[in-house]
Length: 226
Image 1 (tube, rainbow, N blue to C red):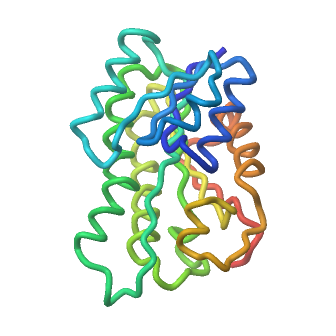
Image 2 (cartoon, rainbow, N blue to C red; image 1 turned 120 degrees about the vertical axis):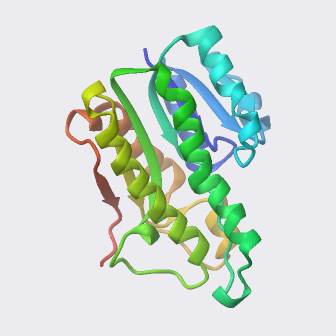
């Protein structure tokens, strides 16, 4: 049994991951502003905490729970994401900040809060996007989102180097298009090749075993080219 922290668990990939880990006997701390879906799912292995990841002042909820209940964390999955689809001239500084607060700053802050509870063999996975990979096909309108997803790739590489002596692995999964509510909201007419559950299956397996083979790596999880 492992202790798993997952962000962005109210829907999509995060929701499916929380269910999978719980059903396999692991303890899950599920973080999301909207706690209703997982509370209705009502699994004994899932603790749901309502948190606004864009507000650093709420991060104490995470560290307090771990300190008082778990003492250690085996896997952290930074899955939460914020997407704004606008032509570049229409993107304001506030839009960029809103996207970066969730996709970059929250990843850094929650990782910082959890690091004291990570041990030898722990695994931190950040879900990025093919949009953050240099040389990949880009979607117009996603300047804020894709640049943020590129930023967390570099952040993860740096943390892998900084904590390699502690034998804590940091890896990134740069995923392609997945049929989630977030994608549908941004691109209503686009049909992705994978469902949220299919991608969750992949991330579930990688979370448990990927750190045996990778550290500081970015894996491109996409069937499209380039």
